[in-house]
Image 1: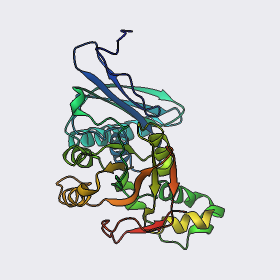
Image 2: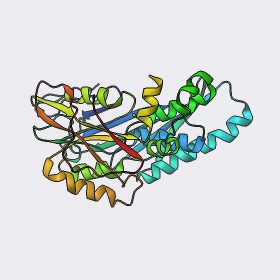
Image 3: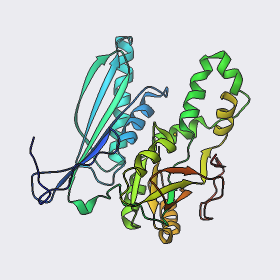
Image 4: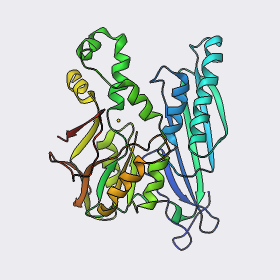
Length: 311
């Protein structure tokens, strides 16, 4: 592997286990790369392909996308012939919506039905936002509602009588959750540059608390993230209580938030519909703090989303 000195390269930076920013040996260029995979949490193979792509493609411009498909050993030949083309088409269609294309990949047989994507960009440091610049006074903005995982679980409980009986009286937003998962974050990522976002992370498997904690620990300034509100797909909180998470979390300068909301609502892309204020950045010791208070009154309402105070 090539080595670099402080004089000619940025340090390598990894946030979590699925993305990195690495300086290249070619002058002034960096490699930005992210990967993720998706299990069969939805029944529609086309939508599964779309979701697998959205899970990895949350950038404005992409130089290369690879896709990896693992077919289950338990699937019949007929099932493979029907399902595989639909999953690949869903992934390719979502990739085109993200302004790029699949250039390669691999298909294997495994115990699980899994779809994975790898997105790669080569660019100059000015083209990306380093995830360590949160400033006191920033506003925490979330670009998709929470509750996706609960909706997916509730759907799977249809085959589990005991669990289903605990939640069947609650109406839930299964279709909205699936559309949220399949939505590319391209517009939100682009607006981050326009409105001088300081940091951001996606909210996926570790939930808003887990990803926020991971992000705040990387900050250079002595700050804490204070989460005040949790926009949740309608009825998801009720299901969670009866039984006992994709968007971007962005730190924006306060004066830019209203303009960000206005432009994301007017976007031509699918995710151009909503964003919510969920908290603020305060001076602190790089922790995430819940606070049962209402966030600054700039977040728009949504008929299918409830706002829950954090607790």
